[in-house]
Length: 357
Image 1 (cartoon, rainbow, N blue to C red):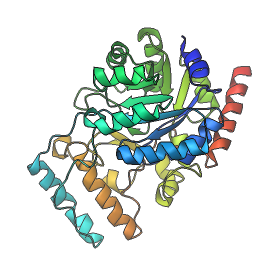
Image 2 (image 1 turned 30 degrees about the vertical axis):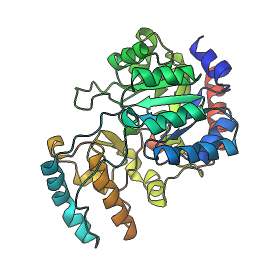
Image 3 (image 1 turned 45 degrees about the horizontal axis):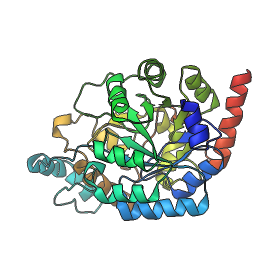
Image 4 (image 1 turned 90 degrees about the horizontal axis):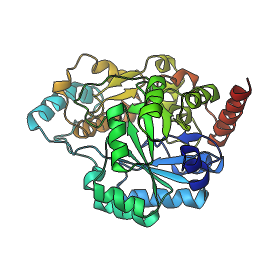
């Protein structure tokens, strides 16, 4: 079955448009609206735990009977380093004090990797969403076999050809080619490995020719012209995240939305400081503070995120929104705030125009 057939026949998608999972920003209302409009809506459940994920899936299905993509993180569990973590807390203590808040006394892994989350696997096998997608790597062979046996289509993120080939060997159905432009967490299997920083266009073309699997282009795509360009290079669909952050249905808070509409959208930054793994963020106070901090000083993922979330909460309590994980791709200045269904209709119209232009 071709990539196009997988999308249309197996999943029932009318448009080559996939809303990126965006853990913490995507919502059941957003996913349902995108799927109902003919695309593929997605939920990022990595930080929700099995019980939270179950609620999110149930709410999405109550809103729409369209296909659903559920995304999980397959990172290697972080290794604690008390000395590094204590120094990290000390580094940011003056910011907490300025905000009238106390820093965390210690940092913990605030959520599980899918590699060790048997409850999440059981939930997915029971819920059977149309798609389960993997970020940061792959789960065990047994997990992949079980998901495939349940009739679930599998996507996996790749930032290079070697990762794409690993996904193909593992039995994944489609590859999400995540270009350097993409917002949010870089999907590298090993964040300590050299990163060739391939853009979405050369990466999409490379993987379409060499991976042996259908490719979904992701990174900096904000309109129908961008989707058309990806399709011309061999992609079967495009995955858009930042294009949906400003939607009415997203969970982005007011500070995030204001930053997306500001000059910060023109200056996105790849940073490890917020979470402990490279992620593209709108330029804000956190990215500025971390600009000169060496990677070796940063705690492992997701321990660093424990402090990042605490600092953001302290800032928001005082009206300071510049410490948020305001993930966005390089196409951020092209954001168009509107309801999700209107975004999908607009993208579809632009795509049709690009094909006939």
